[in-house]
Amino acid sequence: MMIFDELQKRFEASANPDKARQMAAYMKNQFVYYGIQTPQRRALYKDLIATERRRKVIDWNLLEICWQAPQREYQYFVGDYLRAMKNYLSFDDIPKLENFVRNRQWWDSIDFLDQIIGNIGLTDRRIDDLMRSCAHDDNFWVRRLAIEHQLGRKSQTNTKLLEEILLANFGSQEFFINKAIGWALRDYSKTNPEWVRSFFQKYRKDMAPLSVREGSKYI
Image 1 (cartoon, rainbow, N blue to C red):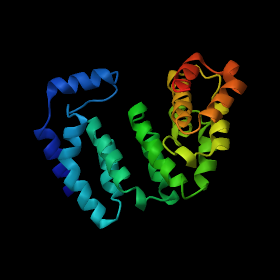
Image 2 (image 1 turned 60 degrees about the horizontal axis):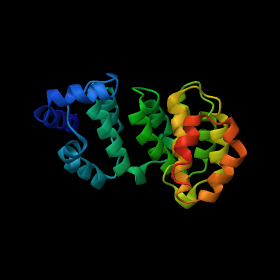
Image 3 (image 1 turned 180 degrees about the vertical axis):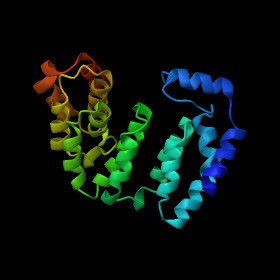
């Protein structure tokens, strides 16, 4: 609890009520905020995360307390913490990460958890089968995570898996799914535009206009 108490102290001292209202409104009032913007927020706990990195042990109790805390900045701390500690994460940690995926969901948390879980998949192929399963989940946020988990992989992208997951999510009326499909294609088009062009040639007629518009931005 010592780290959480220190984190809370720093957040409270830096709270900005006007910014907090603006940030909450931007996120459709899904969460409450201290009103601390990203550069300042990360500066507030940079030393705390550095200390944890030197320990080389993930404090899951701390992360769980932060995830349940009301202000959204605590969940952002969890994301930055896990990114800093990514080399100490393994497939065995998936149940703990899934708890974060399925609770206090919104695009902002899913969009850092997908990268954290995706990074595990670079060294453990069991993530591939997990993402195949997630692509059919009843919860659309979990499906979004599966769609986006290979963002940034560039030449390490598993195109067979990417295609399978995208096809599984065609026909969705959910904005956040169709947007994610487009983002996944747009991201990979920077590395392999020919593959993405071929994908569009095969499936454009089955895709949502939003996915086509987002995915074809760079080709």
